Image (cartoon, rainbow, N blue to C red):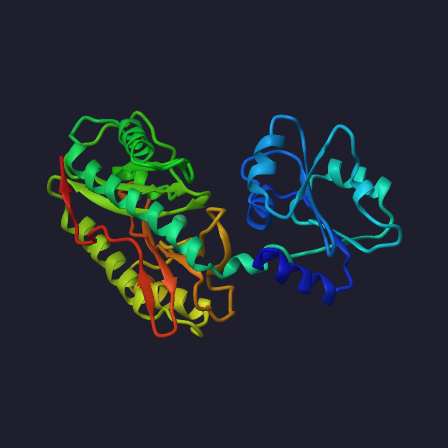
Length: 348
Ligand SMILES: [Mn+2]
């Protein structure tokens, strides 16, 4: 039995839950190794099942150690549940349709809340190794794109080149839709790359990451096309100072909201209300996981949380700047995985 299942069985026992029906694909991956397949898993004290169709049977049998593979066309969830057992379901992610179907068959359903997701907040060595690989590929993509960008290129071309580079260099995929936003479009924190061409004086925000072994990376750099205005430079340096200061404040035990505040105070003193989003989020099998570095999260960070640190300033009509690293929280500080330079780089 793997450690993750063992830990989960302990959590289930505390709540008197005998069986959990796992429907979230990322949780299926985390607990059984079943990656990108369809179906569901059933985890009970004595037996574990992957219930899937013929497209994934052979795969599941080879990777899901300790699980029996059952054909979804021959079974219904109630086949795997003993009578009167309390059965946990994933209330935060199951579709209403699937829930109704489950509730028709099983009387004693109970929502599991964060029970399956919470252990994922602390990464083990293998997970960090995979994330590190995904970070390195993204770092290499950044250094490539800096020498590739020319004036007149569109945001779409920049984003496509980053995606292509990451895939050619070992990534399974991008971890989200790559953002490339030039000049005034940089004020849209989640801009969709457009036909806008890069011009001298633009700041270009590039936010991207990739997936290795199912694990995501996430980074942002903002570069200058030729010379930029002194106002843009001041904005850039403010974000950089906020980012570096927040990094210094990260360690196990630091409150997430306090870390957010370190960056927010620096930005708000010069550019009030121009930093609208949270400072960061955790990253793992999902690109956005808990815990967040946000003003609303007063929980302490824990060793081996993997979080982004990504302050930004967004000025409509002028520009946006965001600088983002991925870090592993340690006992006395943090290990900054992202190695790309952060002083302003002129490209094109
Ligand atoms: Mn991010």
